[in-house]
Image 1 (cartoon, one colour):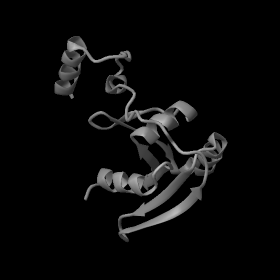
Image 2: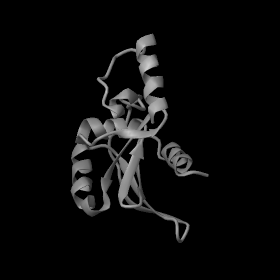
Image 3: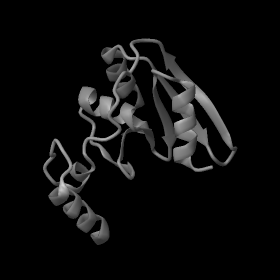
Image 4: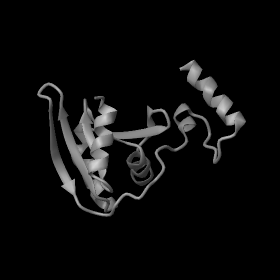
Length: 135
């Protein structure tokens, strides 16, 4: 199982809550949770996997971002993943509003520095393929 599969399973388990998992020096969320957090906390989105965004905040700024999350009034769960011990622990659970965001990305070309377009068309798709090949 990969990290992304584990995160997807946790998100299904915690339906409606924003799910963060500590990986390395960041707490990360993806998909619709990332889009919501980007909108609410203005955290930078990056590509997680094809057509799915991720955002995160540094472990050293944990208290600051927990406070900001509390201000949003959304429910969330933050997990700590320790691969050395193969252990996943819940750190914080906060009940609140459900995340009803449906978008999993903010148009993937945004991550590549290209202006956001409302609809995909043949020009946008051609540009997207070009940028993917250059990666």
